[in-house]
Length: 161
Image (cartoon, rainbow, N blue to C red; front, side, top):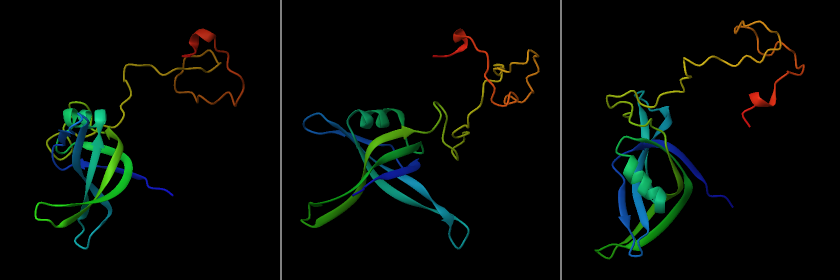
């Protein structure tokens, strides 16, 4: 049997960090996940999914993420029930997160809230690309695969491992 959930979405509110009587950290949070299609008006709807995470991951989430932060959640779906204060049976379905990945840039604000959101990978503009071409000319625009699979002469000092 398989019960696996992978989600990427934005926190709808700050995570709610609490501790059990035994001192174990637990954080409840809700993420908004956009649906992959538009509705009849051309707008994208979102699903609001309740999640829970335990221990150190719960503390990290509460300390470093806030409403609007983009997170990735990997976990499993769980259903439970309890009797509320009025004596009615309440059923809850939530994602129990095994891990929560922080997908916003450090210090960056989420998209749509005055910031640039998550930035794509930007290579270091000052770093020169490695040129392992066996031809001893220094033209960096050459095809790096021009040797057609022939061995490259590299010393052990050039290897990163």
